[in-house]
Length: 205
Length: 275
Image (cartoon, rainbow over all chains, first blue to last red; front, side, top):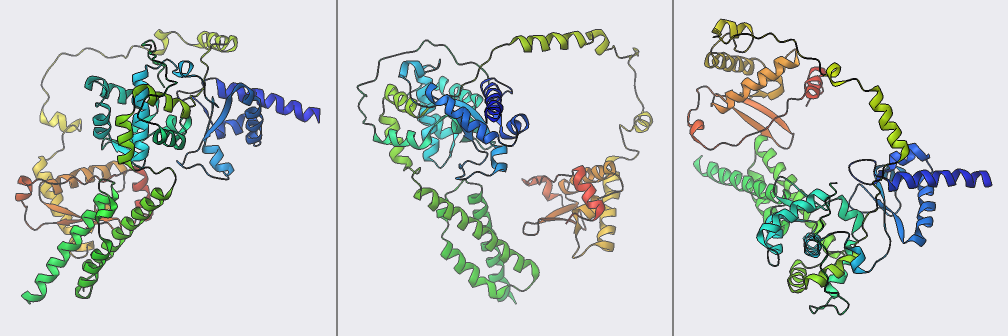
């Protein structure tokens, strides 16, 4: 029994290293890579790791190749999926801007919400028009390009914008839309008048 | 005679317009509900008894095929609207325009779970780097100077260029004319209805020759010596030579038809597996 525990212990350790440390240009690890390194029971290892991470407010996040998350994923679907470690819950606003300027983050939030409402795709022109309501024109294009570079959005040859892998990994789309619709137009009382240092999150993805 | 031809022509034009509209919808540039399916089916039904030859029937089938794709898109639209994720874009747009920047960020932060990744060097990775560096040959060894002797500039004759295969041994227009004749002969021998399958014409014993033939074929079409006929339903491409060169094509705005001539397709064609 203890031997089995030891085996899983070392597998969890290996999985932690694989998931936390950057291995490729994109963060995260593909399922087949985990299977190769940990064996075919890697989903169980990831469940154990997820339990370990819970008290730290972290989670193992799975992003499937298909846009929709299957209810009971097959091994093949898991192999093709990408696994990440992400924040599980919420942190106070000032700790969570992660080096982003508040304008840029608000622009990202608006862009993502708008694309979700347009069935997952919108023309770049429409997004630019929307952002330019509250953002200087010179900044709009730069910001959209940055969102694309980070992996939040992707753009096709026809100038259509879609949500990309990072949005699917990081953003709870349903919660975002629900919260957005339930907010009042008035300022939230809890909001702090805060402007982060203009430190760019320039870690190229 | 005139009385039956006219409605047929009109019917064909209407079906072609319907297909075009369906393709625009399939490309997600137009809302699928702009097409009134009942009306379209009425049109298809109206003209169906008049269709006699295979081309007309194919057009009819193609229309139905595209119409089915549009209905599928409509059903996806309904499904998406019925999910909890659907939000009226106008309502959301209004919210977005009204909401304060700070409030928007507050909302987003509640739904945002950023990824965690470390970028930290370890002793092991440093050791690996050192080992690699040790095994790496110096640049001087890896990038050996190319042994290129300096030659003075001069003029190359046409014969020399032909010898070096920079130019063909015939004038291009002459070559194109010969190739046009070859196409006509080929159609007469192996073709049907004055046309031949694209791959049956360009396909040759070697891949290089096949690419060369495809290259020349593209000029036959561009310069009005022949035309391409595409059967979208069967996904087949035919080439049809004209009896006389159509020079008016050169003055019209034409559409490009990209056709991939990959090595894999050539191998399939050789094995007789390419439809």
